Structures are given as C-alpha cells and as structure tokens.
Image 1: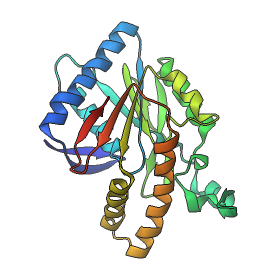
Image 2: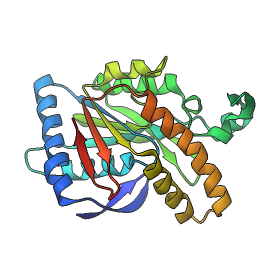
Image 3: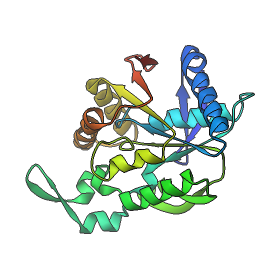
Image 4: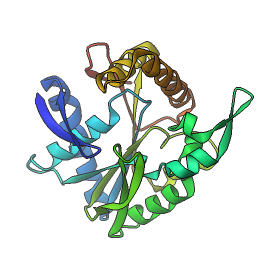
Length: 245
C-alpha cells in the first residue's frame, strides 16, 4: 500500500505492506475503538520509538486508516515534537555530555531539550477529555507553534521518542495512557535509515554523520530505557513490521 501522508505539516510518500495493514494496523485500530467504547470516554494511546523507526509516519497512517475504515472510530495523531523547548532557550542553556558542558542546541532531541512539565499538563488535559490545544513542531522555523492543533476526538494517539522512558518525570506520563505501543529495531538498521534521511535533505555527508551520532545516542536510550508496552512492533530490514511476543 502506497500512501501520501501528512507528517509534521509535510506531505510524505510512504509504503506499507498489505500484510501489515490487514494483520497489524487494522486490528490495532479495532482494539483502540473497543477500548474507547468500553471506557465510555476518550482513549489515549502512547506510541514510543527510537529516532528512525518510522513512528510519525505510522501514526499518520493509523490516523488516515481510522478515518476511512467502517466500524473504526477516528483517531487523532499528535506528535511530542511540539514540546521541544524553543531554539532561543536551547542556545542559551547548557547540559552535560560525556563530562563536557555543551549548549542544549547541540543535543536537540535529547530528553532534557523537551518541556516535560508542559507535556505532562497537556497529556492530563487530553486524558481528561478536554477540547484543548496541542502544539506542533515547524521544521522550517525549528521551533514549536503553539495551538497549531486542537484535540477534539475520542481517540488520541500521541507519538514520541520518550513517552515510555523509564526515568524520573517521564515515567509519570504513562498514568494518562489507556494503551501503549513501542517500536523496536536493530540499531544498525536505524543508523542506515537516519543517514538516508539526513542526506535526502541535502546535508553534507560530514554534517549528516554528526547528526546521526547524536540521533543514535537518543535511539540507544529509547531502546534500552523504555518501559514495556502493551504491544511491541519490530521494524525489519525490509521496512515491514512484526509483532513481538
């Protein structure tokens, strides 16, 4: 199945196997629909995955499928990236990396570069069923745009790297979730996908390589420090997914 999906405000052409759609994604949507109806209120699902695993594209596909599949309730896909701290903050604040004090802007995408308190409060409001705003990340401005989205539906799927991170502050996010999903993958497969992603945007190879190293540090953190999910998918070398037992 080939689809053009909206991902972070950009049109992305994606391809998924029919087997994955029929055997994994549609049953997942039916499961979320049943959960929502059983709860009798808005259902909240968290989708966590390391950089390069395709979580944003998968979330966009699930949103599109939910709006065209009979018997399935529409799902709103929401990204965690809108909770990045603003670039001005990252440039003016520091963090420790390998014993060295560096600007936060150098490690943008690491857990400390997100406004965790703001994310926690937004999740609380979503879980409470409120009609509430949600920020989006603008890749042109390199900053979040406040209130770019509005949460009004009955199933909310929030995707991000650290939503299941088993660390102080982050682990509190799980109390707002009715369902959790995690994507795992071989680190070298992620490295290849991340390299291709950066090169495709026109970055010079040496700049792309430096960015991939930063991405891979975040990827290892996600893979090694995320709490168990209700469902775990493994990204394979052919870009299909399998359900892990």
